[in-house]
Image (cartoon, rainbow, N blue to C red; front, side, top):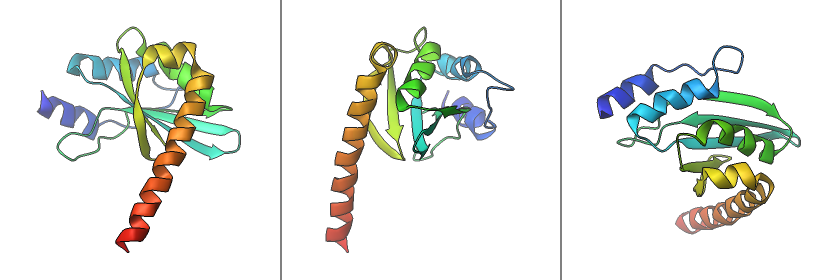
Length: 139
């Protein structure tokens, strides 16, 4: 099973809405019984993108199996991803701007996207301050 995971993500190309759907990417993860990772990046003041991948395995960060962009708000990213995740997954790992900000239920993504987006940003800021302080102490 681990070998199947590594092969499926090592060869996965980043796909956009034009040539594959998030549902296709979720179908890759479901047979592998994995909890997906939702990575959200704020590109500009009103421009967000998200990607979906499997969790880290043996220290290796797998390639994204789906990418979508052009969302005006963080909450829109969460809502869009929740539509595909909800029938298959109960929980998802969420990363924001490259930092893991926790594990959340897909139900939260779907019914409380604005509140969850605010919580994730606050958690990101808290963890970023802690990581920056740790780096300064180590230097």
